[in-house]
View 1 (cartoon, rainbow, N blue to C red):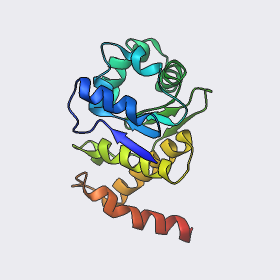
View 2: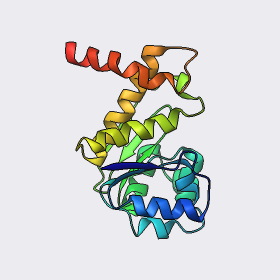
View 3: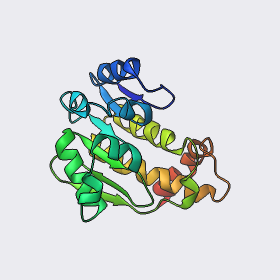
Length: 180
């Protein structure tokens, strides 16, 4: 009931078609799926719904929303404008991950340690968000919870983290939540 499209897909028409097909369900679009629409973001925006989450880093954000980040006073304003334009939840990755939905709701996850600046960590975040969507969580809530869990898993592991370590830390993070 949820899909992730982008990581490892390659940039091009096949990835665009796959991304558009995935929008029939709850979908997280990341990496190559986002870059595949750089020449025509409107082709993507016209098909997005409230069940979709875009998870760009700053470079991918600039490809889809040219000039928005630079023209905004802060990342929250930028991600709100992007979510309104796209018509779905947008999560702008970074040390202060900003998340917004088209209604203007916004949140910032500030618990991400520098250890997350490693190859594949964003792909794992996309998977975490899709897992929450598949369990029936709304897109904005799934993006917020996924970003927080992602940061906490990295904090629990500590230095030397590689992307594959993140899912292994989730049981520990969830146990702490249930105990607290």
